[in-house]
Length: 611
Image 1 (cartoon, helix red, strand yellow):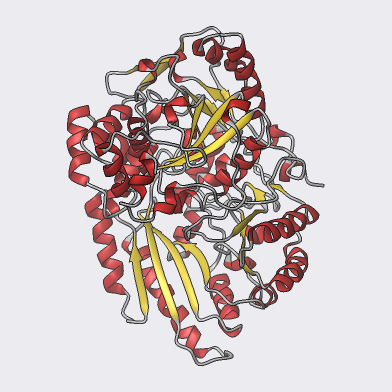
Image 2: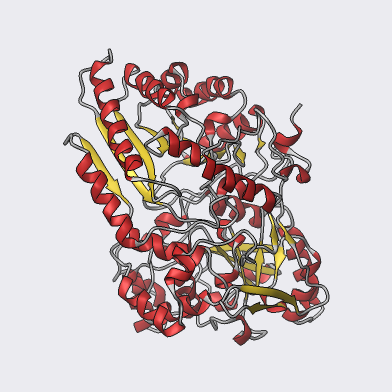
């Protein structure tokens, strides 16, 4: 029994750390040129639910010269054992210490995982700050949605990959292999990759601040460092690599099913939604491509459920025809089809009946706001009648489990908008008991609210955020307004939402906040039982960070924002236009109804060029 095996018998869920799952890889390290660790800064069950990990794991391992292994945040019990026994953080596939890899690639999916990144580097005995690492240390890179504001992690990451991984990852690895074989330094390699779009190397830039702590200027410290970093976009979704198999975890993941990516981007333009802006334009996969991968994934995993992944599945062109053919495959294999949150205006009795033919599940709708006025402010573009119609169709089709998602603290929100959530839930409940339905089951209605967090590259990126006290007042207002005991109300923690806003709109100074929080023992901050608000406030004092400045301050349109040097295709002028329209309560039509000239057409593909 080796040293790691001795640890596993002392921890809960040792299967988190052993690798060897169905469809995993095992290569001879001596036969490869590039050793790449895909790092997800959360626990195994969360990481194994992430579609991007499955795609890039298979994508990188298709290369004969590359071995991509996985590493996730060890749970608390495992970390204790590792530190007590002086065991460095290791990969799942070969149990190789991370310090021996060429690359460690972190995916940044949510800001509350950032202290886990530092904790993982520390467990691997790798210096946290990029300036302190040597030629003997791996290159630390980062990608994912949070890199669209990379500055809070700029001091820890060697380079950021901004955009979709399939575009130039091969080119970067080819160049690294060439430079490695020539004996060139990491700094020479970092200088060389500056020629690529989508690559941001923080060490080659300096940020200058005004007296009021806003950003005055960014200065390039290398002649090859671009002033503007353009995101990388896949144009043809049918031609890009997509795995015909996915890893099957040893233990149940958060989303324990096979995932089929239908398209990238979103037509809708909800003003609070970062994903809807940074992933523009909408680029779909053809029905034939989707059916081919669906069949392969079902056959190679043995899952009993397939999830159709996208930002707005009901906007897929020819959805019902696709569902008809997918159902044939799923019915033959007794596989259930899972749809993510639906837009109620696209919900139909026909579609509902089809997806419940194999096994009925609950339905999730996201009205986001309780009144029509506020839905217009956020550009949700659904009416109350459409909400009621969608729910009525669901009820008459036999569904009695419905989840409704809303946000609290949206710009211009009033108490009347909060009461509107309770009124909407009450009316939906009454409708259920008036509807003719196949059974007499009681309604299971869940109302969930999240706290609004202003994010980069949205029309609300300049908005102020409510304070913790105001969020809590609104939570109690809504809780007391919901009179029926049969309506269950859940809400997100306001304290973590404030911190999320601080980090999401942070500049390079936030790096010290994250570092100080890590040193004080913060980790797994996205887990309510492990979030320690008092330690974060202590870290704020140590790093001289004022939460009000980053979370509760309204920005002016002419302020230099930390992420302004990144070009996502969507023009800043368009975001300002949308921000002003939100203040007037004016809506913008979705992309297939009318082009609003957001700027995403520059990528020469997708919905912008549909015939």
